[in-house]
Every structure is written in C-alpha cells, then in structure tokens.
Image (cartoon, rainbow, N blue to C red):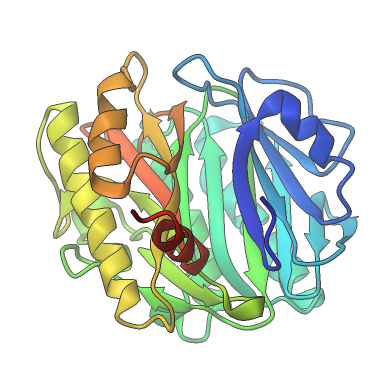
Length: 335
C-alpha cells in the first residue's frame, strides 16, 4: 500500500510490471541472473539470485509524481524531496576497482549537487569477486579505498555526514549501485556495540569503510525512515561466531540495538518494516525465517538473496528499513 511519503516495498516480480505505469515510480530493482541493461531506465537489474523459490522486486515510490532523467550514465528520478539514482559501470580490469569506484562516486557527487540534492542518504553497491585479491589487494578493500577517496574530499564533516551503505559480491560483471539523496541531511546513527566502520583499525585495509551504521531521515507527512546499513555478526570491530545461526542471532541483536538507538532521537516510534538478508551460496534460508519472526514479528517483509559478503568468515549480512509508519501499523494490528 502506498503512503503519502517516500515508500519502498517488496512485491512479486510479475506484479511489479503494474507499477511501471505509476507516475510516482522512482525505481524498480529486480534480482536474478545477469541480464542486459533494461531499455527502461527505471529498472535496475542486479545479478543476485533470490533464495527460497520466489521472484521478488524492490519498488521505490515518491510522495508525488516524479521527474526522470539521465546524466553521465546515471539514471535519476525525483519527487521534489528525494532523488533516486542508479548506475552500472563495466569493468575492463578487475585490478582497477579502486579507480572505477572513484569514477562512480565522483559522478554521484556531481549529479546530486547539480540537481539540488547534495545529501547522500543511502548507497547500495554490488560487484563480483568481492573477496578475491588482485595485485595483493582484496577487491573489497580496493572498493573502500576508492569510495573513501571521493567522500573524504566531498564531505566537509566527513565522519558525521556519511551515508548508510552496503557492499556485496554479485554474480554478474561490473560495478552496480543505486542510491537515495535528499535536499536536507539525515541524522547519522551509530551502534554502541560496534566500532564505527570509518574508524576500523588498519588490519581491515588502508582505508576504513566509509559508511554510517544507519541514517535517520524525516520525510513529508511526519514520516521518519531509518536506513540501516549492511549489518553482520560483528562486535567492536571483530567478527563473531562460526555457524550461521549464531551469526544470525548476533546480527539481529545489532539490528535491534540500532533501532533502539534511533528511537532515542526519533520524534515518532520506529519499527522494522523490511529486511534484505544476504547469504553465502548454498545457505538455506528456511530456519532463519522463524528466528527473524521471533525478533521482529511474522508480518515483516523479507527478501533472501545469495551474495558474497565483505569478510570471508561472515555467512550472513542483513540490511533494513525501520519506519514510523511500521510502528503505527503494528499498533493498529495489536490484539
């Protein structure tokens, strides 16, 4: 159901065709095998297999009719308050991911500022072989170096203006990203159980990952969104546990902590609305559904995707969205 503010939902991919006729459609993200770039610029196709036999799309809507355009390879759509962007860049050399990431992020910064939406809120990043090394450098660390190079130069208050983010290993070639930006900034939220990612020690690479744990944003009609970055079984800066279920429980605790921390600063109570769960190949999502429902409720929208994760020892990563609307809906359905 669409609300009077920015809305995101998961739906069956077949049903998503209907939303292509909506004047409020910002972007439609589909998942599956690598495919040619769609002729419809509103469609973003990511080479991530969905687990569990479903075929799901992620759909973003503005609060009002949107205007769309293309600039320097970046599709963009805006409703006056929010800007949705997507970009896909081919890779000619797997050892040159740092430079490619710099290109992508410089384009993001230029276009968001040029269109009057200078505040990046949330960025999703996908590229293959995330844990592979080329010329002695892991590709995730190369990506982090390229991202840091641009954001450190673009953000005047670097450590307090970082967007939420995720970076996952996809099955298809090239660097794919999509993002949200706004005219006014959000509020950065950090997890007291974890060292902020931008302060990781040098053992994780010469440049720390440049993202906030979550970002709280006020939208129209009094709605608040909490954009939660990719979250894993990490306490402090160290990975925890070796089995999937233990890692899941630690990850869920981190998610709960982030929502609680945001609720200390939010003007309305926030509740989890949807989760995107990334699992390494051959992982079975079935036992995870019940454990997630125990923590966040059975009506939560879930999307399970196969992906490689930034640390080889991590088996699961979860990102999410908590909203004040979800809190109201849970109260409305309370017995």
